[in-house]
Amino acid sequence: MGAVMTFYKLFIIYLAQHSAMPQAMTVAQGDVMNAKGFTLNDDFGIAEQLAFRDAGGGFIVIDVDNSQCTASIAMQGAHLMRWNPKGEEPVIWMSPVAKLAQGKSIRGGVPICWPWFGAHASEASFPGHGFARTVAWDVIATAALDDGSTSISFRIAEINRELWPYDAPAEMHMVIGSKLEMELVTENRGEETITVGDALHTYFCVSDISRIAVRGLDGCDYLDKVGPAARRTQKHDIRIASEVDRIYFDQGQDIVIEDPGLDRGIRIEKRGSHSTIVWNPWIDKCRAMGDFGSDQGFLGMVCVESANAAEDVVQLTAGDRHSLWVRYSVE
Ligand SMILES: O=P(O)(O)OC[C@H]1O[C@@H](O)[C@H](O)[C@@H](O)[C@@H]1O
Image (spheres, rainbow, N blue to C red):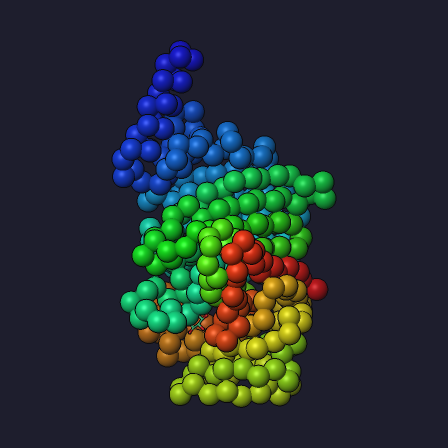
């Protein structure tokens, strides 16, 4: 029986490597297999803490449940969809009608914008916010840490050389506990200097967008992208009462989303990021986008994105490494 199972597994691995098989499939013993033939729960699962699940339609989702939090991450895009520290209201917003679809970004969670933010600098036909959020990533390591949190590392698995003709892949390292740490690393293994833009496009849950204050950007210049692009300077905290789409040029200071309705602040610490995007589509864009759940869907979210965008893109010389790191916590 063992030999038959081994043969069956090898046959499945061969098929996975030699055909256009969907990314996920369930093997006989209930494990989940990726396109490279790794049996993910066998290789990277952690008993009673981290499990891979076939979410249908070729989607694999990782569920984490440790002593500090629960979380879920889609392997497409290494896209964190949920992070709930125990005893707290959810921190990360996810559209109630979010769809998991191959090659499409998920509305909510933490999309990874890489290797550029927004429109490509010269190629109008290239996808907005890069391609990392819509392609497969591999898990390369998982661990149960001594303090009760869980670490997961991913490496981007599909690079379209027409979009990114460089030997410069990305990795994402997460530490998931009562705080959430994410580090997006780009390594330039090629011979030439390259330009990288990136963002952790995080959707945060708020009680009511019109009651929150975003603190920490007072005095920073920003590019206002609503209406004709204009450069302005922030005075005081940010309060939101209409569409907001801004790139702030900051000094890497902490940012806090003060939410009196939930009686909490969400602290954003960061390193290797010199821009912050603050985005809320408000009613007309929310309606036009159609994937917020309802016309009022914008009321419960704000994006505060740690980034290197616009004039803050990173020049990465041969052999160099760029790290964009954030830590989120509730206070
Ligand atoms: O719909 P997308 O591609 O996920 O982008 C959402 C928003 O992302 C923000 O980062 C941009 O500043 C906005 O301009 C954009 O509308």
